[in-house]
Length: 460
Ligand SMILES: Cc1cc2nc3c(=O)[nH]c(=O)nc-3n(C[C@H](O)[C@H](O)[C@H](O)COP(=O)(O)OP(=O)(O)OC[C@H]3O[C@@H](n4cnc5c(N)ncnc54)[C@H](O)[C@@H]3O)c2cc1C
Image (cartoon, rainbow, N blue to C red; front, side, top):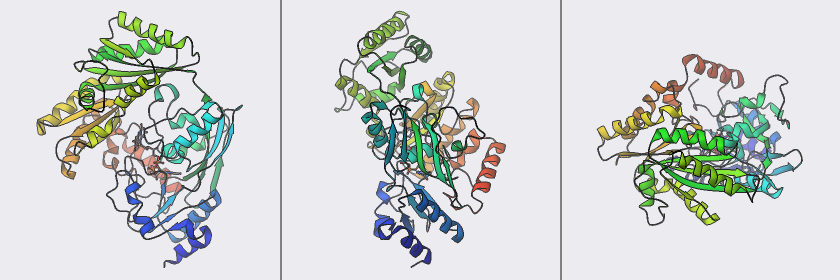
């Protein structure tokens, strides 16, 4: 056995180092993987000091290592290549402290997002970051991908909900920047180095997250609109009328809505012939009055002629039914080969851009479709593209259409999923040569031997 593995075993104990079948059997847990796991071992530290020792050993031996949270990343950033090590934070999974006065929590990187949400809830507080993979995705993964999700329009992305970070650098140095304050301008804000950098600059081991007051009301509706201009006007109008409580603005294009509501498992809350449907949600502070206020705001926009139709949830189950339509991506994934995309651009360019993408796809594959939906309140659109062909060649052609059309609008090839391996060839569309050169300089300065999550985001 490799001498380095023996050193890891001495450091972490036998259960801290997984080998053989225990490594390959993890492949299925990795989203977007090809079903294999070529990592030579999975290391499972219990403390930040363990992570530091691991990194020192890797650094001395020049061994490459890939941080791993819940494996739900959608751009293959967590995937290890032949002979690389995987560093799983799964045993560092405690919420260490919730301070209900300061409204902060100190959490270890391997706690699931849902675990953080539940800990906040237990203290009668609220951790607003939320996404479909919440039960498996870890807070370390969320921070390192700067995850977005459903409530960004109100509470921002992961970055906006993190106050402090403890991370371990490639050479094993521990940077304990567990700031507890919202304001701290004492020099560089070092936590930003680790947020959204996909494990290429350090391993996040602990974080201080910002908690909010728990909402006392939740109002949800689905509305239909006749045009994209109305949609833009409606966003401005409803945001203003709800006075800062708008927490979700999720748009379903007609082709997404129709396909989902044609399935027996889903109920169509309104006819299928409107071009756009929007799931609107407001989280407020007054359980008695907020519903009336919400309905009045919707009524006013209807009177302004912005809405063609509206359905307001009157119970938790009706609310869940509306959200189920938004979250029904598996309908498309299970129907056959399907490529998924996550891009962002200005809301005013979105209609033209998405029509162009669809037109170009159907010019090559007349039966193909780009089912469109997204967090439009954040300028974030998702496509689920089905062309009846799941080959790499088809994927590349669709990528070209989706990404190259962004150039004209100065959009981003990644709104919230990161770059990983999947979007690496397309990074140049959203970042200039100078920007990528600066990223490389940072990477070289912090990881001169290139051992930490190598080959992700860009080549050094
Ligand atoms: C059903 C579903 C819905 C989703 N919805 C959304 C959504 O709405 N918005 C959104 O943004 N994403 C979404 N995602 C994507 C995914 O959940 C996020 O990217 C998530 O943040 C990844 O967390 P993870 O713990 O699974 O990380 P992993 O997949 O394990 O890793 C992701 C990246 O982070 C790095 N990493 C992980 N842990 C650490 C650490 N402790 N230190 C340093 N680097 C680390 C990895 O090396 C890798 O580069 C969804 C995924 C699924 C499966």
